[in-house]
Length: 173
Image: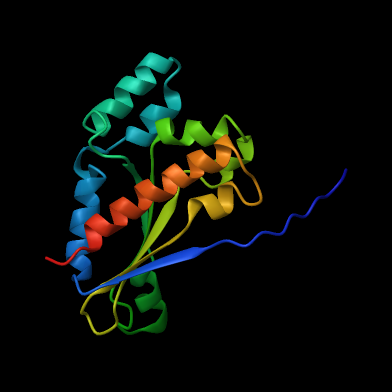
């Protein structure tokens, strides 16, 4: 048995917006086609042919109009408010979103990239009920830390797609 430790510096990105958290979440759900996502992750995990995988992804992303699909949401505000016995937390959600067609552009160069895809974004409602923050770790700072070449280029492509998504959902009304 051997153990290796690799240090790297991740970059965290935070977008703050005056857009109400409810609107940010509505926009995010729309961009991820959440309404039509029931069972999509399980379906993708059970596909055995490339053609079927591509067809399922294209169907879920409206033939590439959307970059990402909804894979899951974990809300923390409910249990935190229950635990502390008050409504301190407006809204706290972690969304897992992804696209295997994007993921494969990185994982084929380094299977460890699969540790960081699908990416997550963190949506927090401001305590005063006005506005929200959307936070994510820059994928290339995790996936391609200390690396160059095609892996870095692919990870930077994911950076751009994630940033475009966050800009769409946080843009002023």
